[in-house]
Length: 303
Image (tube, rainbow, N blue to C red):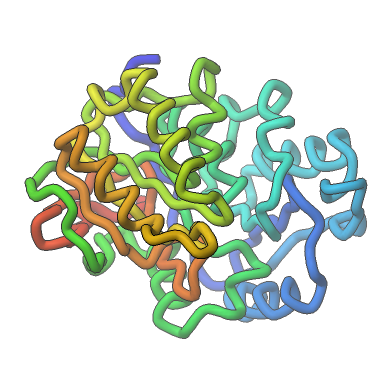
């Protein structure tokens, strides 16, 4: 697909705006969910179905339940945001039958397995937020929570984020695209992967041993992804270590980044770690990889 000529930003949120709560992926812990739900209920008016807590094997209900729930949320012109309850697995199963092209001007919020939905929206030129799901939101510190609400409620750019490791120096600008590494690789060759030409690629993951990270990274390289993007932002790679190994996942990722020679910085507090700072996908950013600094050049919403 070609890069969209103009990215479409959702409308900003105001106090008591209606928002949808959906579970398009895996089942979830109710106590953890309620902590995050209570936070958004203090600001907005959440809408959720009685079957939100359904479970079918490793999914939050069967495909029909999850698809109908998400489709209603996507088409509801009254609502201003869609908060995902949890990641896990299952969102990509819904992609062929979702009315994504007819989505109302609302903001999708989530990460991990929700990357499948983010990428499909970016393929249509829509901005969305890679940020905490509700089962994670209540565990985040106040500055992470406030950053999310600022992204949703203000058209101004949020403060920059700093990483901890400059792998390959260089300064680049482009739209931020990506999310969970596993999901990015799974959508290669499908119509749901957006154009990556000129993008700054965000990657994070959990529970993948170093050789699996190498395998997925190599898949991206063989598919030509690294010839199209301008730079790479690496978030948390949580629980990705090999037991008793003399090398770390960070060692492997650094070597892989050095091989392709694109500006790349790591250690950004984005993903499955203790901190998951929300970032807007589809918006213009500047990556100074030598300083491990990600600057946001525009906001996520419009008035």
